[in-house]
Image 1: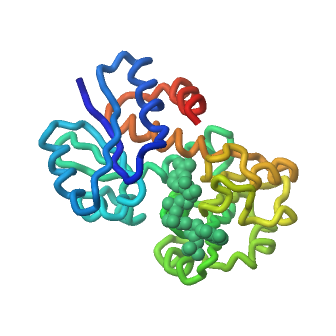
Image 2: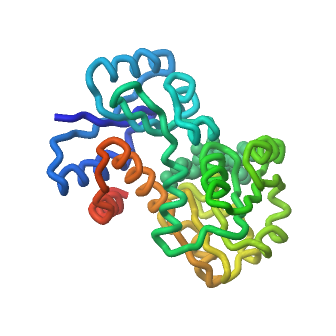
Image 3: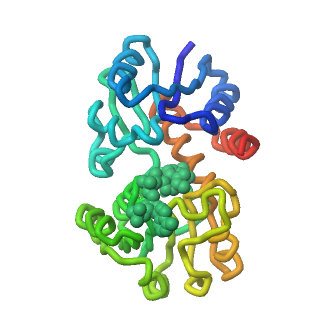
Length: 264
Ligand code: NAP
């Protein structure tokens, strides 16, 4: 039996176990997906132990994505983002960042063309992954963040990117085709970081927040006639990408999506 899992702290409400185990069931793979909550002090030993025990792959979540980047060899995208959310233990352990693919594949699944200009709101972990993912697709990225210095630091690393404050959102969105909320605003609340009046029907809007599934931003974007993509799609496709890295097989996307949405 192959063992996969998730390390983070806390990991109690993770949706990854049902999502991955649904894939094992559909493809008749003899595997389990389990969660681990090491302390930060024990993280390095935990990774060495995982390799020694023959664990096949691990996802990594808050607060360890940046620490793990220092502890395993990362591919160039994870290196540039500065965070690892997937480790493949086949051979030398290698770190990947599948949050980036999660953004791209979520948009592609909804038929959204990745071109033109994107406004990424947020410059934390999700904002970094989103900005690099879209820039690598050739999209011009405008990063707007509450703390402008953080947006500036990210824009300096991302090709074709610029940094802005949240007060510039109206002007930025008027010339944009894509909007991603990569802040935690709206998580288990009815708040939005983007004023409703700045939304329009030429936009495709992805909210990284997935609790609730229909955030205020997505509700107001739909009312403005925009295409909306909820955060569960990003979560799904980061998992799909990890599954495909680990198994070299095409993931059963529909089954994983159904399991994820049932667990939400
Ligand atoms: P993070 O690194 O802590 O970054 C948080 C971001 O939110 C920063 O840009 C921060 O701005 C901004 N922010 C927080 N409170 C704010 C407020 N009141 N007003 C304006 N901006 C505010 O967190 P993260 O890891 O990037 O996660 C962000 C969100 O994305 C979370 O809700 C997380 O669950 C979600 N996420 C979803 C997926 C998915 O697969 N769907 C994947 C990863 C993350 P400052 O820099 O000014 O503090």
